[in-house]
Length: 247
Length: 370
Image (cartoon, rainbow over all chains, first blue to last red; front, side):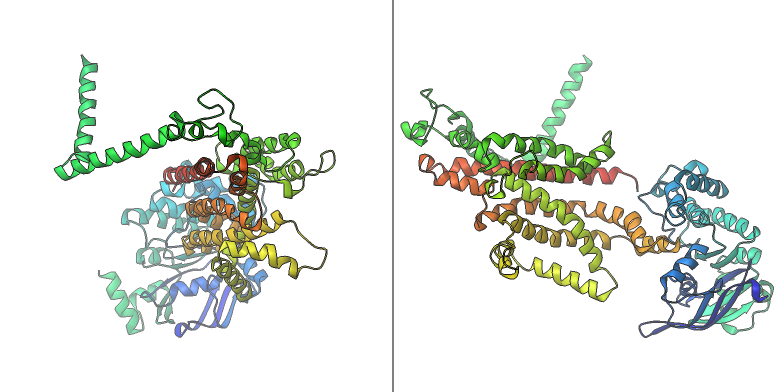
């Protein structure tokens, strides 16, 4: 089992000044696992996955990704970021670059790939997210759902083996959520290791093999979806589920 | 038939505009009339002084004007306007300073090539832009060689340079050198490394807290005191250093404004893709930040271009310095207005050009993508 272990968080703590955001987080993610993380806002779920690719630094505990420990060493950080893709709530596409350039930028500059090769790869991922016809447009000309799919393609173009999703559908109009979730489901079926912060419980039921519920900087409950939805143990989880499932 | 209809419609459109904007009420009508009278008075006075009643090279008797005694207004006082002959007589000094006139073609060549050197930077959709940009990088060396001299060309010391040459040299070189420096300062000021950050903050705040005149004096008088004996950079170079430092501090603040407008998510997205700090800065942050910062950057450039005239206090003869030298010349005394109007016009042409360019860019950026 331990050879398959790709992410290992041990007693991770983080503070914003006096505010204790993450409290003794322990988490093991195995290769190919899909973990859905939910919890009320401010519970530290986004912060936790942002620590995994060092967009945030933790102050105590250890984070090991693919056997590389995250420290202040820039070399380790670069190594980990090359293998860990991330999709943001606000898409964060580069508005001054065309869709094709958005996707081929990192392969060209980080992997030093020749331009035409990088563009071929970019096109293949655009086909995968089903919008190859938008390649020459700029992000501002696309709908939110299309932008998020470009953002997913942009991450995939670096060929990561772990994908982090930070509330990928929260900024979308309801009718666009499905097109993004469909891409994510497809990705999950192909065996990608995924950590997804989301409140899309339908998606969680279809895809997740682990559910995590966080509150006030702690992992309150961690269980299989079946158990999590039908037989939650903590009262806090029960309350949260009743609120988001019956709204 | 239809053309008369159109005429009527367009005439009534015109008429409606007039009524709405100029004659909507009695008060408005009175203000409009007063304003028109004022504009007419000032305008007609200025035009008759500057053009209709003015002397150019010859006076009203058809004689070539060789000193102020020949100006029509000095022959028939009160009847005549400006005497532009001083500008013609001193044209070479206004353009080149004391540059040897047989070598002036070198300056002219550089004047002619200057637009070609900056066009590639100013406009992104011109044909062969890449070659224009190459030329931009060659140009400073070419200009140095042509203006100062070297193998095959006689050396013309910078103490001979003057007039528009000095104004443009300080303005263009100062802006050109300050630009990269200001980007580093702006990035440094936002750096997480405390020493770099405080160095940049101290530098920017110090320069911004001191008038340019003080910097010029410092560069001119104090610098030699700190340098070892025998190292004695020439006056123009000292002024250039002062102007460049001054401009870089202001430009850095303009660029910092642009940097602050870039959402944090842009940097995070670039980082999560594995781009290094410099790759993120070059490919993601700066292209967006500079776009936003262009209007304030051009603003500081206009300010600097005009401020170059302050170098006359450290004994350099820029356009204004040459003008004042011309006024001191006994043959042309008392022709203040002509000289200052001419100098203003030259400055205005350059600054107005920059201002229009900035407006053009703002419009272009608005209609561009995003």
